[in-house]
Length: 319
Image (cartoon, rainbow, N blue to C red; front, top):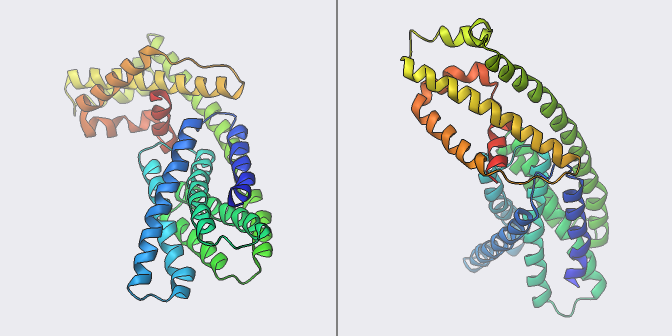
């Protein structure tokens, strides 16, 4: 019965994946995150049982300690994905966060279903659905806030929502109804806004990268602002380093254009084959970055217009 309550959540998660027109999250990644959520639930269960054994009151655990522990543990894989640039926009942040929370809820529901076999089926459907939406929604909210603002603030919001749910102020049916009426529509709204921002980012970035690459290929790069800026760095860098900086700038721009082209093809439903040359170019880019050093990389920052999304796009090419 708990699985029956989980079914609508799985359908909602798949609908988010379908609405992701740019295919930022692969199905394999989604399944892996659900498994991660299951593992996190097992770890949380062990910690909660240990806290009960050392004398923590069950009410304190349920209302405060468990929400804090569970939200923190669910946040760890999402925070790692944000830090390693595997999440670039609010769209993939929401999907990944909801997937971890859904996996957590699946494991938790199966555990409680195995310990409370006498509960009426209707209760398990309602509880399973409400718990799954709550866990998925709170982790998605953490991912969204953590990506756009501060992770600590997102964690606080997730904890408060989880704690309120565990206070059982309303009946299970009413709690589930409130959560369903608030969290999924909120995620859909954020989803739509992020899609709009992503579309604007692709358009603006494509234009900037195209202009820069056109100037570099025109033979008049030295006369352009970018070329004059590089020439002004002669006093600070050797000729060989400047040559590597120019190669780095060109390669970074070419790859940036490519990833935006890939995203546009995905949006329009065209299949995208993996290019063997991309791996070689990424290796060359890493080599050039080491060659010019941190100082050279910082010196090129005004030309690269680098944002977290621009760093994330290299992950897309590496997939």
